[in-house]
Length: 99
Image (cartoon, rainbow, N blue to C red; front, side, top):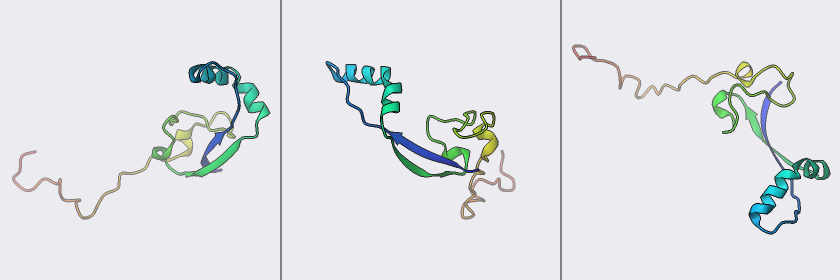
């Protein structure tokens, strides 16, 4: 199985006195909003390495749709640093140079 980033959004109408209160109402009614709404789902692509995880996800997270036990760190490889052949010797010590 592969891992994908998806963005899920719903639109709802809430009654409130202010934007701050509208936010609070939306949070408190979130379960009902999700149950009553048809979500828009955008697939943003496959995740092939840990450094491609969304900002609020870390290697210890469990992906949705998995077995509930296997963590992202077990499913994805850490990416190896890319070595630029043009500058690879730039940081090598030269003969007689102190470390």
